[in-house]
Length: 198
Length: 70
Image 1 (cartoon, each protein chain N blue to C red):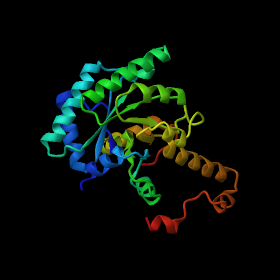
Image 2: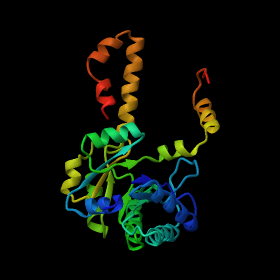
Image 3: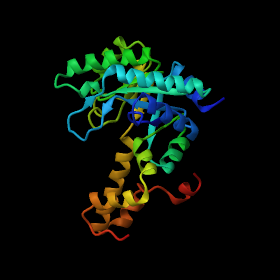
Image 4: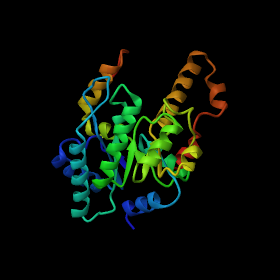
């Protein structure tokens, strides 16, 4: 499965995006309702427009004879308002609309607490995806906490890339501190023989 | 069975599916080697693929203050 941003355009353009994703061999696509306008505050497109994009994606998958192609609909609505509980209500409402429009599962972004997860699980009428290990929730719940709530899918969007960058920073610092060999010996370098056998 | 059907079956099972996000092909292979059943490809990967080389170089120059040798 792969991130498809906003589908790279309107519902008509989404058809083309889905076709291209299927051609690459991706098993599914994440479609999101966030508007990428470079502003700090998160804004989302009209929910009916997003629903139309999901319908387009689903129709395309069926027309292309890949009805199992997974559509994971992401909503960023939770952070689209100043009031967090209001944002959560909007996100849940959108999640249900996206499921009704043909999404296989829904991903509500920016979930910070296990209480948020419980409310979402109770209110959303379909499979749920939650991002864990994020800077804003990494200390608030574990993988097992999410499993216990019956969450269908757990994504880990930033965990690996931030861990890699952290290791790069450690290595760079070790060069400046002239203890590079000691750092390497301590085992956080990935073994070359393992890399060759990947 | 195609990959979409496999993923659908995993999502529809009673178990929670843990899908780490790969940010390059090597990280994808590592995820696979660690026995995860599926992974997601981060949008940054697509941006790297879509951006042509000249734009990529310009991006390096824009975000980096250091002297860059091309």
